[in-house]
Length: 132
Image (cartoon, rainbow, N blue to C red; front, side, top):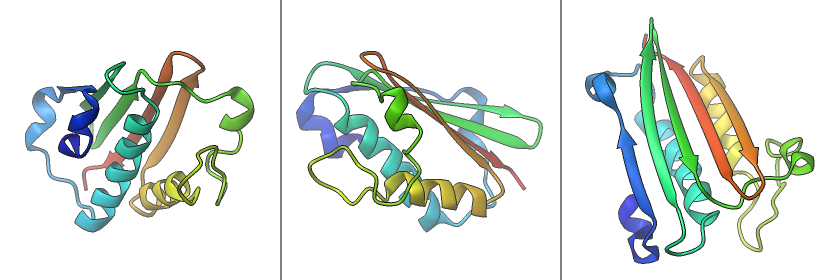
């Protein structure tokens, strides 16, 4: 995914620690769609050369938590109430289905998806999935 946005000179940091070798009991295609959508949103929220995306992961008992944080524009509190609604978007392109699909994928796999955002500071998307 990083290579898709390399030309924009946005740095990506990975903080994976001991979770590098964990295996999820999850559909690989669903996981690709899930994280591609989240990373696309993160990179699109950052002006070229003006920010970073951080991917971190941790394990708690039989769950893994993956967090993707960007230093982009952030999401207003008003819009935060609608981000999981189908077809809701503030972008001039796209369908407004990305986060709706992400939430459904995570819930289908028995996990939880949450988003925290501050205007002017960025957004953090947390995906918690069971290991078994």
